Amino acid sequence: MNVVQIEKDKTKNIKNGDKMKIGNVEINGFACLAPMAGVTDRAFRELCVDFGAAYVVGEMVSSKGLTYNNDKTKELLELSEKEHPAAIQLFGNEPDVMAEAAKIAMEYGPDIIDINMGCPAPKIAMNGMGSALMKTPELCGEIVAAVKNAVSVPVTVKIRKGWDKNSVNAAEVAVVCESAGADAIAVHGRTREQQYMPSADWDIIREVKRTVSIPVIGNGDVTSAELAARMMEQTGCDLVMIGRGALGNPWIFREISMLIGHDRPSMPISNAERISVLLKHISKLCEYKGEKTGMKEARKHAAWYFKGVPGAASLRKKAVELDTFDDLIELCKLVEV
Image 1 (cartoon, rainbow, N blue to C red):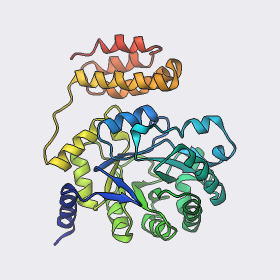
Image 2 (image 1 turned 120 degrees about the vertical axis):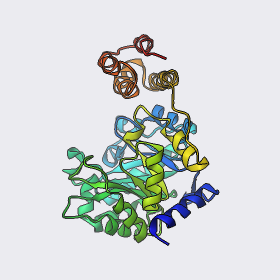
Image 3 (image 1 turned 180 degrees about the vertical axis):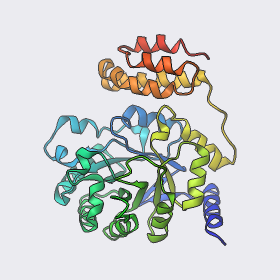
Image 4 (image 1 turned 90 degrees about the vertical axis):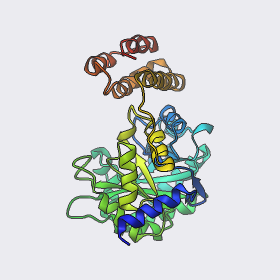
């Protein structure tokens, strides 16, 4: 039996009701929402759950910021009853500080604590955090062990393929993290050097899956239900993680559920539903953050939602000038439904 057939059988088992678990947390579905700074806030997470996201991860939170009692950092930790199971993701490079931050994060009721070992942003990686941790696998293990000993919930890790083309070590880091107590590993199929281009390497996800016994979550270039199904078949990953593919497109989780769970595609979304979802999203954003802040953040979301609709270029240009929710309502009236 070849690898693809094995993975098809695995997907079939999932369809038949075998649900994956991260530690003792049951994941009821096939796709989860990736952590994205400035995007995966409470409003967006709740919306993705409404559309079938099986699990969500919040924006990354500075471990030092938490231990220094930074109010802005703590705002990122708020979880609602509607979005479970949910993880709080921490970043840092000091095991003891990460452990202390994890204890503080537990006050907000996460189901899982996730450790960021994949962020490629210069301000993170150039300070020895995020994806830079992959250059020192031993430190990765120390951080996982410290956090694991500090909390009572499962601990997961998000990594990349490696630091650069000369240090592709995702499988090695995954083994170290598993040995230190990690309950699952999410793998993005690019090195830090590659950032988000070119295409993600799904073979590295499959390699990690073959190397460890804990669940593996595949991440990278999944922008449709068909690609989600293909990733599961090709890599054997236990769950697909959606990042940029969900921007302006939260119904991707519904489409994945329909295709993988029911063997049929969902109906294409209409422009009327697209606008309805956009307004619901931004209404929640303004409710949680206030209209002034909410509408500033709404500009990028509106531009993503308008992608593909008639007159998208003009709509996106106007979206950057939004100041009030009423402005958005008027702009949406220009969309052909």
